[in-house]
Length: 251
Image 1: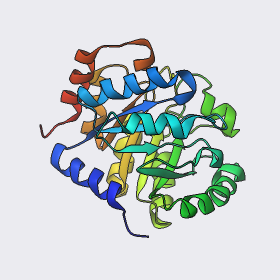
Image 2 (image 1 turned 180 degrees about the vertical axis):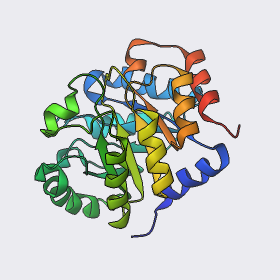
Image 3 (image 1 turned 135 degrees about the vertical axis):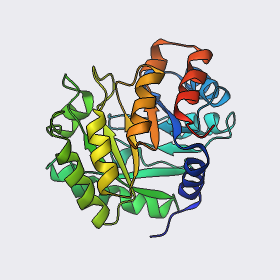
């Protein structure tokens, strides 16, 4: 499967800017007005990409929320699904993910089989993505929902070999995730080992609370930096701009 329009756009922006700043919006934590406001604020202050999703089973108002968001922003709006039930119309694309760091068959293939037919029926662009959960110092929602153990923080070569396998199976993106509300971000060694061993587009998120932490991970080889929970607590356009400046290493 060849890259689609949104993936090509993201790849071109990575080449232009060095790395991209993505803001993750969780539709389960806010009403439509707050959801749209958060997305618009991110778009107006340096974000390159809006991810939408969470770990829960679904949201009946998600298509309406996404339509309202897209009416206010000109950025790619990409589904970051917690399961097949979240595959709904309206997104520019979705991260079609496999939890390669875990061994729960539900997230290795079952959810993908359920969601794949919906993706095709909706003619939705899918970006094949390897998802890896890295230990962040506490048990996260993703760990609880998925029923899998995270990769130990001090074992970066495990992330590397998972990424190699995923690339050989045809996945083009890899998401190294510490989890929503993580105490610590993904260690830079996990990013650096994966960067040296693969040509995959590396996304990393969870526990990234300041621009310097983001910049260090870009220097290690991350292509897309994701922040989310931080903006549920802080409404600061200036801080968004500082993140964007730290991530956009090519200006």
